Length: 341
Image (tube, rainbow, N blue to C red):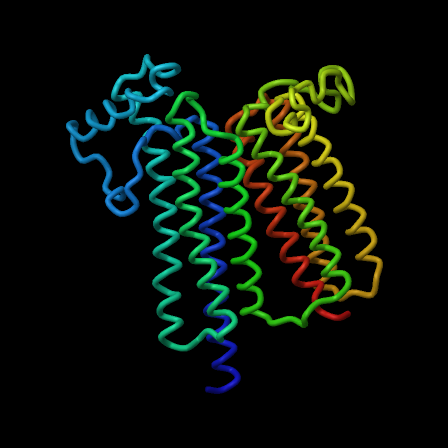
């Protein structure tokens, strides 16, 4: 096998992984739309394989509707819904689940093909196998999340929602990183690339705090900026017993934490960009840093707009998509900075 063939084969693997990462990005967007339209509890059973078949007739629709009627969301919130109304929330959750299964197929079949063709080295093979396992665990986590809304409270647990979102982000980053390793191998790393991993960790933490905002509907209150309840630091924070649970249970504290983590993230990214672009780095590395800066500015603008609009649906979905784009830009920047100047 020639060097050129090896490069081409690796780039084929990379393009496949980039496409899978794009599919995960779309999945996160669909998941955000599902959450904001409160469609996620419309399907009350999980059939990993037979669940790909949609309702085919009115008898199927009536059966699904009757199943939905047995659970708290219908009984406490949506008792007004007819079968026609139920269809409007069913389809979004059905597409969400179907897209997840499609990601599994798009990942598994080429993975087996590349294994048969011996296009993947031993280390990468195990990384990709691990990603496949994570994908399966993500499906289980999704159902575990839905289960929490089928018991007493007609809403999913914010802890399980955030875990589901966080695992999606980990899979997304991993797909991008391994894809970049296949597309253009880089040295082990530089001091700059190691420092930006700390920035990426802060961005992830901020995104996860946003998961708690979404899981508790905390974005629908205190819809002013920069003040919150008329103050930069409002009274009544951590008014929860025990206080250490306030960042996860108290709506005011949850929104406050997300606001200030977002501000900190913006300042850290801005400082990293300012400091790094003044060092001896290549033009391509500077472009990667500029991309990260543009992504964080866009995300801050979307976050403020979403808050002021009282979570207008298009802005809410765009804000969640913006978080993934920022993570993608930072991951790419971290990888580019692995090149010695």
